[in-house]
Amino acid sequence: MLTLVEGLVRSEGGIGSMLLNQNKHLHLDAVFAIQLVILLVGILQDYLFGVLKELFCPYTNLTLERQ
Image (cartoon, rainbow, N blue to C red; front, side):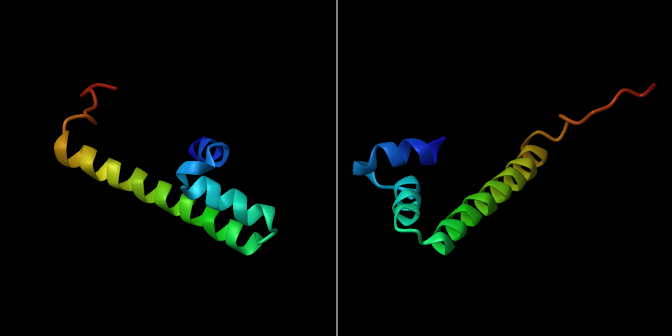
């Protein structure tokens, strides 16, 4: 969604406008590279949020004694 909004409002720049500009000129290798960077940053953020959750909230994954 963020890249879509940045593409619509190109005056601010951002990764969405860069993605749409590369797609407009059919530089598909650059489009794929940008999408890969977005995916890798998302996976890294998900992992880091999990580590921070375990570090700051260690009791969030408690289970019941009886199952």
